[in-house]
Length: 139
Image 1 (cartoon, one colour):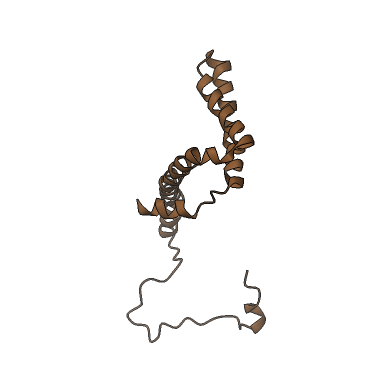
Image 2 (image 1 turned 180 degrees about the vertical axis):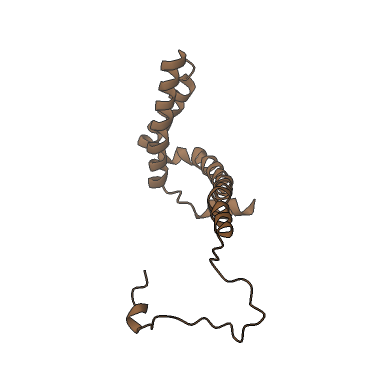
């Protein structure tokens, strides 16, 4: 997986970024552990200690977090790659495909993909005349 290595090399691993990582991930894990301790009577103490360690390391010595930050970001990059493909597939099959099927059902053609055999030209005549101002702010 060289793409993960390429993306990992581009990441900011400065002390400021490591501190930000500790201050972001630490409280989330700490709160998740506290929720487990509250709901399951003690099952979340490992998470509480990990969250506390991340917060403490972010405050005192952010360079320690490089050993946690690296694997965490590699896992995040891999998970992002997988989830992107899953979400795009879901959007395609739940949005794009039904729209295309409905257009085909009602005879709407979004683009002309086949040429009429008897056409003298394939040029499409525009109904309005364009002026140079139309090209300034297109969106």
